[in-house]
Structure formats: structure tokens, C-alpha cells
Amino acid sequence: MSEKILGIDYGEKKVGLAIADTETRIASPYKILTNDKDFLAKIKDVCLKEEIGKIIVGVPLTLKSASSAQTKKVFNFIDKLKKATYLDIVEQDERMSSAYAKSLLKEMKVKHLDDDVAAMIILQSYLDEMA
Image 1 (tube, rainbow, N blue to C red):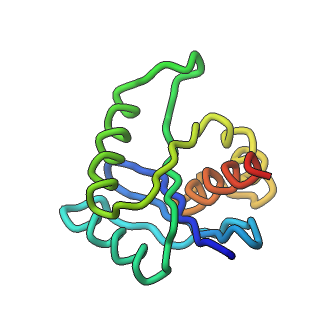
Image 2 (cartoon, rainbow, N blue to C red):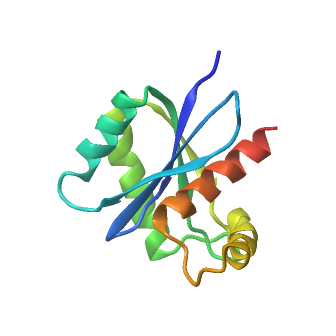
């Protein structure tokens, strides 16, 4: 049976969302949320509306696999997300998606990556690793 998966690119100002299902294994950008006092509730609403079964959150590690200040913020967000949704949450190393993002930007002829596309790349790298 197919399960929908939500990919999240967490940022202090914006949070990118992407969705995929386990049958097609293709991630698509979904939306960008403003990181305000209501954004956890908005993520929960998306999970209910889209019948999400699992969440993949991009974790920014340094090139030496160490934590940074941003990594700690993402882990704090993950803790809050677990309490808000009670869903299975998987941490996905964002470094794996960097090369793909660069090639995608070049292909799309754009200068910067939108947060929902970054979430799509994080989610797609998770799906590709599961293949």
C-alpha cells in the first residue's frame, strides 16, 4: 500500500515542504510556510489533509559530519514536530542533496533554490537511498 511522505527543509524564516508517495517514489514541491507562531499547526494540518504517514527532515551537518548552530535548531524543531504530529520522523543528511541541487539549478537556469524545491531534493534523496 502506498504511503505519503512529507519532506521538510527547515529555516528560521521559511519552511519548505515537499510531498511524495512510496508508490511513485517521486518528490514534488508542495508549499513554503512562513516560520511564525502558527507554522507547526500548519504542518500538522498538511499532514492531516494529505494523509502523511512519515516525515523526512533535512539536517544540515558540516562537511566533517559535525553539528552546527543550525543543526541544533533543526533538532529542536524535530522534537516539537514529534510532539505535534506523533508521526515517524526521519533525519536526512542534507549534504547528499547539495550536488543534485547545484545541477538542478543549472538545468533550470535559476540563481537560487526555493525552500520547497530544497525540501523536494531532501525528500528525493531519501527516496533514492531507499530504492
